[in-house]
Image 1 (cartoon, rainbow, N blue to C red):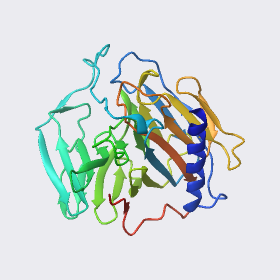
Image 2: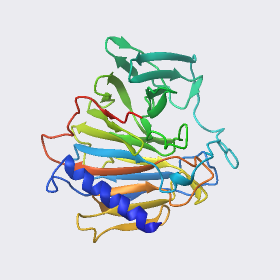
Image 3: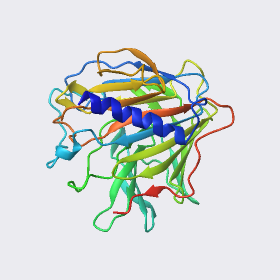
Image 4: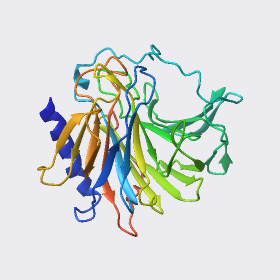
Length: 329
C-alpha cells in the first residue's frame, strides 16, 4: 500500500510539468500545526503552506487508494465526544437559490439559520449579486443525477473538492477542506473574502479578499480520476504568512478524513517521504498528498487532497482552459 501511495504522488508531480517547466516550479514549506482531538467533527488537522512570492499552484482531489473495494459508503456524522457549545453563533434567514443552471452545471447557494461568522460576502454570477450565502455548491449535470464536485463557504473561505464517483458508487463523500489566500485566525483559521464572482463558461471563481488582494480558482478538470483546480494569487501573500492550508480531521487511523502525508521534494524522487499525519512538523516539498491508506469509518469514500506545481514567477499564472474538461460517462 505504501508503494502505491508514493507512486501516485510521483505521477502527480510529473503531471505538474504539463502546466509549467521544472525550472519554474519551487518548493514550499508544509507546516503541520495539527492538534489532537477526540471529536470526529472537529477540524484538528491544520497544515499551512508558506513560501515567498507564490503566485500560482494546483490542488487536486483524487479517490483514496482503496476506493475500488468500497461498495457501501459511510458518511454519517459522529458527534461523540464533541462539545461545540462555545462556538460563535450568528443568526440569519435561511434560503436556497439557484445561481446558474445550464446543460453542463448547476450552481446552488444556501444561507443557513446560523453560522460562526457574521460577514455577508457578495456572490456574483453575471449581473446578479446574492450576498450572505454560507454555502455554494457546484454540480456537474448528469443523465441520472447531478453530482457535486466543489463547494465553497464564502463567509470563512473554506473549499471542498471531490472527483466524480467511481463506477460502483452513485456518489462519493467530501472530507478535507482547503483555504487559499491570506489566512487569519479567530476561533479557527479562515480567509476573509469581500466578494466572489463566478464565470460559468470556464468554471472560474474570481475572489476579492478583505485586504484588497485577489485570487482566481478555476476547475480545470472534473473526472472520475480527479477534480483539479488551478489557483492564482495577485499579489502573492506576504512572506511569512500562509498562502494556503489543509483543514481536516484525525482521531485514529480508523476514524479520520486524513491519516497520512506524503511528499516529493524534487523530480528525482530521492527526497520523497511519508509519515502519519500527526508525526511530523515541517517539510519542504514541491508536491504533497494528504489522505488515507486504510479505510476509515468516517467519510469512507472522501478523497485525498494534493498540492503541487507551485510557481513564483512574476508575471505568470495557471493557464485558463477555454472550457473545463468533463468526462462524459
